[in-house]
Image (cartoon, rainbow over the protein chains, first blue to last red):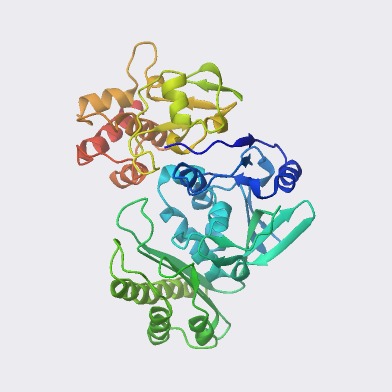
Length: 291
Length: 153
């Protein structure tokens, strides 16, 4: 299989990349890890007229703490996230998810920001980002926008980037006080899309009550799904199996999975409920270790 | 467009279309057919090469993206007529049957052993989890990779 023909540029700096993107309009497409874009081009699901390869824009290759948040640049690969001590110290949900994205070879190429921008409802990262309340930094020649992830994920393979904008960074807030999180993924085999994925995040206040709750679901809706009703219900409550069972029931009825080769909808709903319970239980155990 | 890629230590310059895939650059343009094409959809790992030392699936990398970089294929493992320890171990421990996945398995294995010369069973299985073998059931592949690590250390 071969992609349709396209022109190719490999800028060495961000300003040059943004200039090209602005000039090329709809014809231009940013190539980072390429682990989703190249297969889509080979399958003729995408046929951009001009690829702007940012792999030489080394200023985007970073994972760092800055101004109270964790910042992941557009060239940070899944493997970088997976092995990053900064990430594991900062955010349990992310460090739990990273080893389950695709397979080890794909993780050497694919990027977190690319996966976030791709908005595949079966992709893992946007569930994590919805659960932890991330923001997406979009740059263009005319400036920068910081977009909350809830506004960024619009629908099935659809984000809210404007023409000429590219994702340069994903920002994850740093939680004060005891916190924990997990990403539980059911997959048929390594490298397959999730049958179901559940991202959980939990932070406790000084009295041990729920200060923040995050719940994001993969592959059970038209886009990665933030279960806001469950999150809001948990705030201020005492964490434990009763509360988590209630959140699990909300998650199971909020999602809308399809029957497909990965299993019937009823099975997926049951897994959503069970993984929600287990994820929050793991998150609580982590948070308690710190309090 | 013109690209120059260092393949197994030799500089290779070719005129290519931007859509040329790295696997075809290696097989058809440079003529090294030890890198195989299996699924062509980033699933099987038969096309694994090392790009700047890291295993990647060359059916899902553009040749243009390897411009100015180093690629190592299975042909680059042996040196001076001597099998690389991982090749000797695959031979010794019968780590292959049909041989189709073998170049990828050996490159991933050699990359793992660079970082970790004494991997556990679990660590080897994790490292090769993006490479599919349909013959061996993986047992002898895992054994061979571990043996090569013992040999080298």
